[in-house]
Image 1: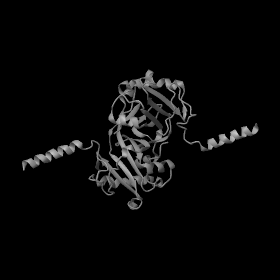
Image 2: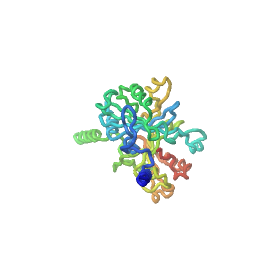
Image 3: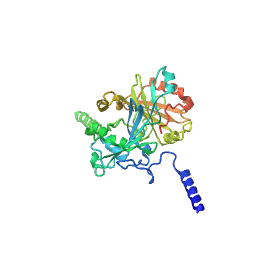
Image 4: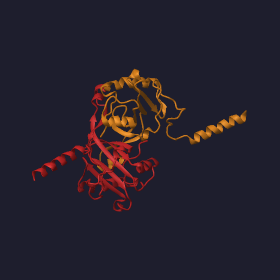
Length: 174
Length: 174
């Protein structure tokens, strides 16, 4: 049976060779996040911009909020609650002083996004599936891998601060 | 002739009623920016995200860099110089502490984009038309109106700081 084992190794190697370099997304074999069972939505990096933000303290990042078409339409109309099918993505990067800006201004002036940081997070609206959390499912992925259950237990309670805005912190930036 | 004056007022009122609320973009009658003759590219707010940034000091804003398809492709490939047809848009908003974040953390934690601020800027690559400025045309619009010639005279000299990166400050945020 050694030829079968060899064939499997070749198949595995070929599969690896054609795999995307970025974290796999939307792949059938991708690991789902705990509790809400979400996977990384395919193509989310191409979604349109809802807003941007900066987090201080331990998070210390620059972030962008992107939305799928349903999310963008709802955000622009400013209607709450968000409809089923809404997906909001939160990307974040390190908060880096721009060296060239310091040279030009003689002090720190510009802070720009560096490497990916603090994972990528998603909120998915499905009023039936996620009825227990007011219609929202949450997921965080670090380097393409789902964060653990402990992390996912904190999502809903924190977002409850903005229950009046359907649990969404961000507002559309015009 | 009073009925003519009245008719003109009615026409003006109707025109106002159907005018877009957002700054007009891509309209034939829109005013072009001085020096480089650029108008606001239609649909730029739908473009994909290149990166995000925060400016301190007098600018004091949060900003997003969006790119048209040519800009996104070139940014992701990391190839310089940018090809003709590249358009990069810089949007900016006021740098606002998130009230709900302060309540939750007991201190300032999150800063989010508020109202539009510091205008919207564009860089357009056309190596022939803008040969005198190394292939780049620049434009700034404040509330939909082009900034004056003095403002446009400062664009190229400031971007010359990053001549080695084809005059573009931002880097693609993965």
